[in-house]
Length: 271
Image (cartoon, rainbow, N blue to C red):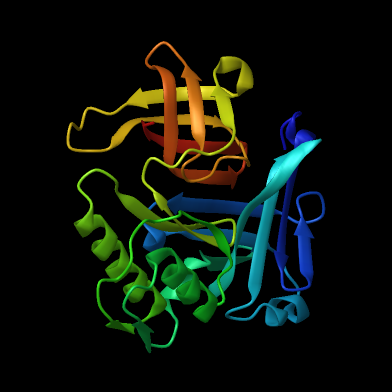
């Protein structure tokens, strides 16, 4: 353990079980993007006894907190999708694969959802969230009403994707995106602006930055910082670096704790 490791704060809660960085060897990789199907985490806990191991079950609630002493918070909330114990010499690692709240949309039972003529789309989205037990983080006020009654059928995710096609197909100028973040659902304008702008530079933890050369990608650059628990999808960033400068927003990120690595990789797009 490095001399600065004691500054780290990291904990994993699985239902009522809590594992913290000081009492348990923890590793994790938490990946989030605007594509909710990619929102997942892999957590490794070392040398659990059989009773504790057996208490970790599929679909159990998971919360991961991380940061530094005096500045830490939740970086992941979701559900266990798989548990895989592995022997490593005399040690036993337990790899827990998790999905965030998008799991509730993708794995909901297929259902029939009917909208009436003149019903507002924002209200319909909220009803789908309620049907899938996902709290709404933010749903934009959308000036669109269904011109006639319509029936949607499928999982919650399939229905939300159809609603996205409906609103994005009806507007040439304004586009909308749907994603999950912090255990909540978001259905917002693609140019949605968060309330706070985070400064990203060498003094706030910027480690590396690589400018994208793919002209077909929305990703302008990929940067790495010391672990920053406040980063979320659509978080606005003011970047100062030798490569790029200005206002951008996070389109995806990965939090990693592994050995001496304790960092956040951020994909940034034009604001």
